[in-house]
Image (cartoon, rainbow, N blue to C red; front, side, top):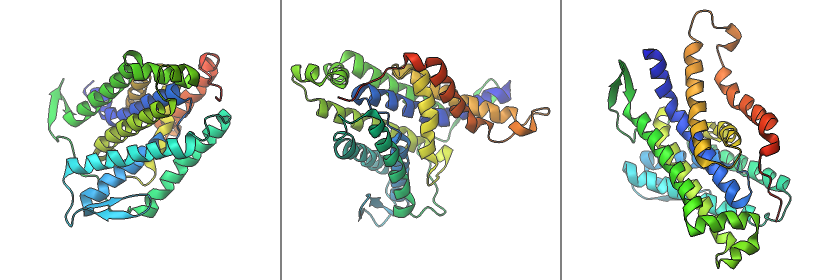
Length: 311
């Protein structure tokens, strides 16, 4: 039981990233009708911007760079700049890529989203030196004893932060004038314009919010998950699985499903160490789980998933 509790908590870091990506996918779909496969790549960019600032004090842009300090930048200013950088990238993606495609067929938006995902991921090894770079610890390294198991407080902080992000996004959509108008604008631009608000600007706000939220959680989780030149790009698959399990409608459900997937992968890692566990399932089974969940969600929930027509 102690081991099980330990591995459950070890799954919080990965689950937190999956959860915030899932919540962002659902939010963007509700706001714009776009399934953003590039959400993981935005997190990837922020993680490496922060790592570079913490190592050399250089703020790297997709084109060009600025030397802010001759010494490594302190942790939280670096985090703030990394989050702002990814949010700016998300904002640019909306205005330069997805806004011009708002009346295009949904398949065109999907292709653009996948293209953006690959483009951002390809920029990382081109713009950053990825050899021997470590993600410095940002959260506390203190531990807590629970039921005879040592739990990292940083993992609990990540979990709470992710749930808070999902709650804020859910409240924004349900109880604010901008949020209600954003949902209305995704379905009918004229309805949103009648409220006196611009659908394009409302969508921009959502791209900024989700870009910043995803990046913040990913940056905080990076010391636990490690730095990989493309790793975070693939986190969109578990995030998509969680979003589909939530039927692309419930932000809170998507968040909880994302955490659940992270915990399940960690528990499967524990089970693979037991005697009698099938040899064929000792490596890679956890990585297959999101793909299986996507297929199951499409087969079982396919008819009830919302469909947005091109405007």
